[in-house]
Amino acid sequence: MAVGEICNREVVIADKALSVTGAAQLMRRQHVGDLVVVEDKGGRRIPVGIVTDRDIVVEVVAPGVNADGLKVSDIMGPEVATVRESEGVYEALRYMRDKGVRRMPVVDHEGGLVGILTLDDLLSLLAEEMTELAKLVSRERQREATTRT
Image (cartoon, rainbow, N blue to C red; front, side, top):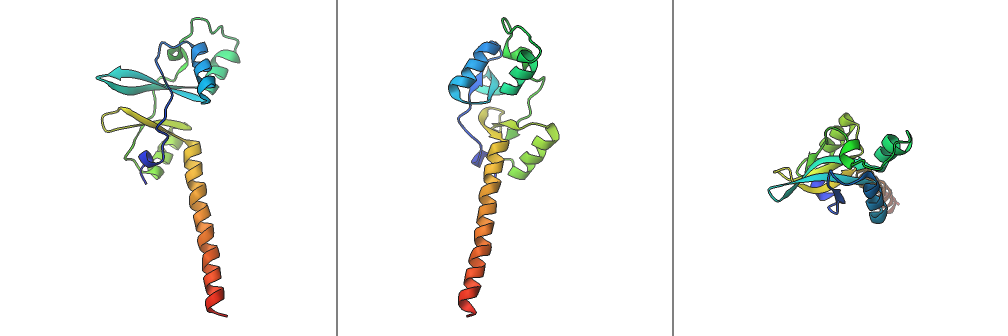
């Protein structure tokens, strides 16, 4: 299964110049824990970073840094790991593990943002698959019981 089939296509985005306080307010308003930071290149939104609620806590709140004047570009990581929408779920999971990230922007073949893949998305998919496997085992037992009585 390709990640483009399971990723969330409603992505909350931000510009690098957005203030950290503005980012926190946007996350609260949209009920999300991350913003994909994008640049417009030729009419395409190209992911250049991610800012998470954890970034704000670890980089600003916990050390007591004054947020006035801080932009999301000041606290986002130096590079962003992305995955193509045609990539398989297993490959994306391995890439997330290798990079140590819980969220990855999903891009098209030209690098334009199309969605976001999160660990929660993958856990939901795996839970559904495990449920189907459990139903199969149960159904097999029922079939055998009715045919062998």
